[in-house]
Length: 251
Image 1 (cartoon, rainbow, N blue to C red):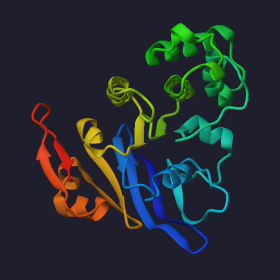
Image 2 (cartoon, one colour; image 1 turned 180 degrees about the horizontal axis):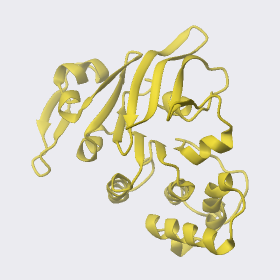
Image 3 (cartoon, rainbow, N blue to C red; image 1 turned 45 degrees about the vertical axis):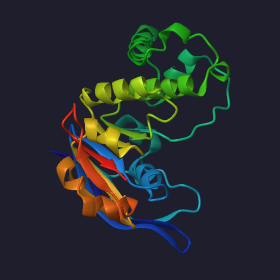
Image 4 (cartoon, rainbow, N blue to C red; image 1 turned 90 degrees about the horizontal axis):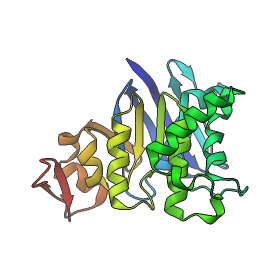
């Protein structure tokens, strides 16, 4: 069943075109990696999928969530259906970690405190930040704050979860555990990641942004020397991971 459909989506700033006529679908329950070199448009695409139009960006086309345009939906309604973890976030208020994670529930309006506490406690525990949930967010490290943001995304409970570089500033072991655990969720997930080799370990479905176009395919189709040379430059070599038996990229 198709959950999300991107239809002839083009975007750019002034005369600078980022991508043109992108069309693809995400099926319910899919786990898809979005890859491409810096500046290829991964963040812009994720913003538009969530109905956010960055300042100065012009676009054409549409994004449909279960047949309805995200650009015509109220933001509160979008938040109940799609969560987006942005690449960068600078908090304004020095709230506690727990209070920050609770903000993921805003789109649901008021709910009984015991129900709210149960949802937040589960997210704090899952991400491994329960031990410092009373700390102020200005007093924690960048990696710890990233974990808080991940917990907030889990709290939001949206059926479609978008992650823009979710493993940024996280230690390697947590990167691995996060991708493993999110894959096991009963969600539709699209995540951008610079490390295509890590993506290959966990994802079978890929979207590859290259020269303003998108290449859609399974892992074995994307990990082709000709395909990846177009996206990342000449000299690409493909080899097999000796332990995990998945394709890897080298230069």
